[in-house]
Image 1 (tube, helix red, strand yellow):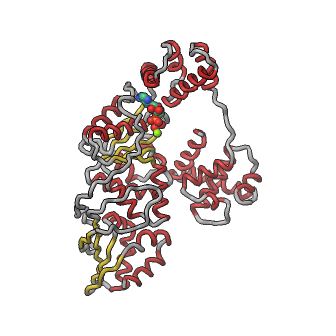
Image 2: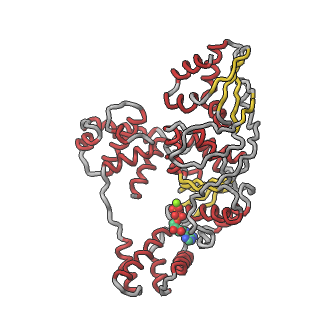
Length: 468
Ligand code: ADP
Ligand code: MG
């Protein structure tokens, strides 16, 4: 029976989804009108319920009639601990000692069942937290610009999962210390509670792992690994914009961790309410805990940061020079540090002492923004990365919606940001003629006017373009 169900399902959903979510299912038995299937994890079950309940219901009805029911049997990982997760995951396996826990769930009511299972104590494994050891609270200079975020971070580090700051969302502009602070929390937890499984991961890396897991059919290992984490630090969630599949997935991981009292720490370049391109339900989760922002440090804090750095690196620098640098580089800490490093390099190279004159000379070069030209290749790669579409597809003849969208946005941006003619833009993007480019630009402009989400996507990509 299940095989004929699978046939129906296969015809109704994309091949990739079928492979990921239906192939790992085993049919266990058929008793009366109840079909029992086995799914590899609770996560799996919830995913099926959320995404495929309608299809499953219809299929069961078709095959078994109105009486037909589906029951799930969920494999609970017991003594076997999740495997350490890398992008090259070991091939799929259900864990030799997995215990089968019978969980009859009539498909008609299971929307209401919320996490009725307790997963028996997973043996702790060692996970490399992926933290930079230099990013500590000690090296994170306090100032008005970061006081709230810093003390919230401290509170979280003292009691991960045990404060109302869950998730803790740290937001602020580029180079203002989000990664540093988030990792400081992780390092502090590792120092005081070494048994806690802490993991730092950037949104890009998570996306990559997810894509790889799909490709290699390893979703189950991926899920098990993430569910075992006690403190998850997810950096730069604004990069989830446009990546709907990954976001959806992260949403589920988030829920699981949060429900089990695990700590989540999230960073982003904007406040939750201003994050374009993220799903509302994910944003609403981000608002559950505390959002604290990092602002541009004032002069005093900038000087303190520089002095701290100088002290740590064992360099001598006159107050005058420190003040000069702090005064002139006032938008972000990364640049402040960058200026310092160049200053040191110059002084070593020229065997000159770092005096005010050298600082002045150097800063002139440092501040000057050399405007680079943007290429169509670059636009193409940015757009493709943003929408998670393979780069070679954009130049192909395919008319798949997401590819067409990526192609049209690329053309639009090429027209707006390069000096290329319509003809050469068309030529570059798969040998199309200039009227296609005009049409693409028109379509994008119309969508920007009428579709808020779309407008957010384009604005996001444009921002990335300008930052480079
Ligand atoms: P973001 O993740 O917000 O872009 P980072 O955390 O990467 O910024 O910070 C950029 C650099 O500035 C890092 O080297 C970090 O150590 C340093 N930095 C930022 N804020 C502070 C601070 N308050 N004290 C000391 N160093 C800081
Ligand atoms: Mg960062």
